[in-house]
Picture 1 (cartoon, rainbow, N blue to C red):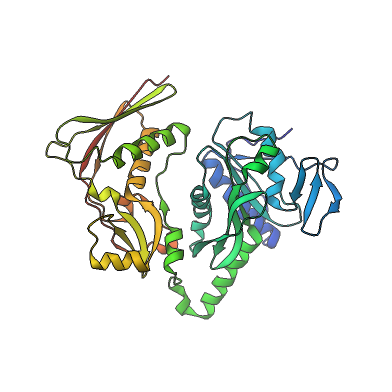
Picture 2 (picture 1 turned 45 degrees about the vertical axis):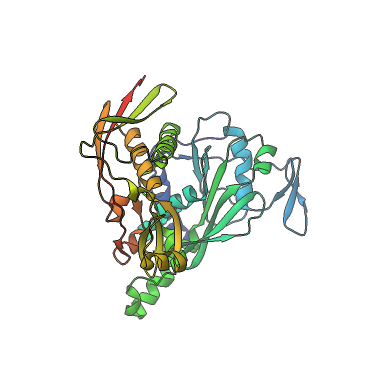
Length: 388
């Protein structure tokens, strides 16, 4: 049986400041952050049993022989029996974490998310959420994935490798009867502490390092993520519908009260109404966000100026269009509605807040965001009905 922790905070009783004590403090900090967001702790993770795991048969590539075939000898593999046990007993999204799933004696803190729409960006957002409080540079480096992950990458803190993130391969999941996509994230807490201590020591010796670490355009682009995002199946369904309808430019030039869309999910119905009496402006929604020369820029899809052509050619795309960020915010608002209607004004984009994107805290004061632009003028009303 797998014991799943309840939604309560942990408390630390350690007083020593040795490595294990500091790891324990960091582990409990991350655990409380995740439990506040609805994650559950796996208290006694199912591992590949001695009967199922024939450790004497380890091949030269580091794979172990099990009844289900070859499984790599690594931390991500240890989640598979747990996921097999809980995937059919909990409703999506399933969000779990554990600090005791390492096959070896190391300090791993790992997170898995089971959801229809989980992707690499979602796992990066979780990593940003956990690491951004350390006030250091966070980066990601895609790597060639190895089983059981079909897509993966390294998590970098101060350019040091402190973990990995990825998606499990569908073939591996099917071997364990898991039908939904699963995202995975692992942080080596000892490496996180070592990276922080290393840079802190260098800063005390070299005060000039107290400034922000220089980032490549690619690293800056990867550090950008959407801020307010829907977390429930309901919210994600609303976001998908809003993105689709806005992309059709159904709001272009709309005057007076008109219904933009209506969508239902289980027992809930959401309507989005446009209220602009003087006409709407929405062309800025289709701008794409780029990182270039230490700043963030929005590049339109048509009528690009010479200056922005240079940004597009030389910079790195974040992969985020303003329409995605706006749709995420509207769906997030729908998730958090306490009544049956809510008015929302979307005006010209001129900051990361108005664009509904976010950066790691240590970068916010040093990255030039003055070139985030988007012409938007939308007065919207969200209407929610059918709540049980």
